[in-house]
Amino acid sequence: MSAAQAFLNPRRWWRSKTPMYRRNYKWGLVFATPAFIGLAWFFAYPAIASIVYSFSNRTMTGAKTQWVGGTNYSGLFKDSEWWSSLGNTFYIMVLAVPIGIVVAVILALLLNLKVRGQSFYRTIFFLPSILPVVASGVVWLYVFNPQYGVLNNVLSWFGINGPGWLQDPNWAKPALVIFSVWGLGNLMVIMLAGLQEVPQDLQEQAMVDGANWWHRFWHVTVPFISPHLMFALITGVIAGFQYFTPVYVLTNGSGDPAGATMVSGVYLYQNAFQNFKVGYASAMAWVLFIIIAVCTALLFKLFGKRVYYGGE
Image (cartoon, rainbow, N blue to C red; front, side, top):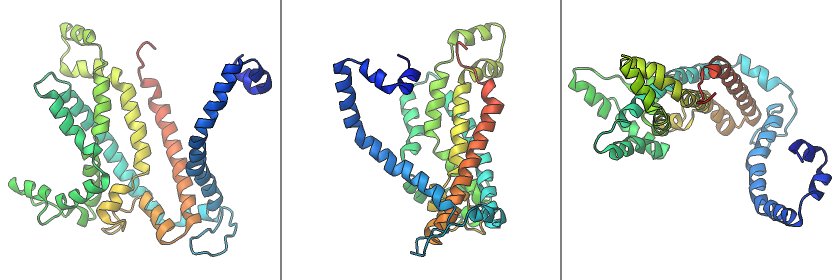
């Protein structure tokens, strides 16, 4: 019996099964019940509740909750700080995602070379991605310090007067981009796995035909790692709109200097847990969800047909 038939006629489907299958099925549901309850309580309930709250004036102050319809959503269009936070989010994402993918591919190409100590180098480059973001942020606060930070000290060796980084509105967002690129070990491993799936016979054949390293990379390597590149692009965009923890740690969630680091995630947090405007923050969350869904669909539309899956 097909899945569609089982869905349309569950009793008939159930009776068609052997006693042992039905017993194992029941015990499987029993053991999976805690996971179902946790999934419903920690994911389904908050999602449904946030939809309801987004149409109300829900707060954390104990005030009576009232239905306000689409007031929260219409208020976002008039909120200049909300638009500014979206602009900061796009700025960081547009820089961090492509740069992160390019750096990850370059590192993967280098770590794919057959050199002595290959495992050691792979471990070193992967380590930053497994460090806690909070701990890494605290360390990078000293790195970005304009007076005695490591980064400005290195720049001074070349006669360059380093900027104020997180204390300068013009350099605060580039500093966040640098911090994001530093912890791309997971993406590097994904690209490295993709490179190891590139057929070596095609590389050798292209070399025999006179193709240089760039032509081999662009016409042989890139098509075979295109699924990994697509994955990195989609997940990078989704994570970019949810960018919060590094900004909160590095700037204490203030959005300083001069609002340069006020990304949408931090602005949502401020409204929900500092201003206690739960309804307004819920509306922000669902608008962000819609933006992420639209951007993801556009990326699939633009690049989905250019992804090469072996054998297809």
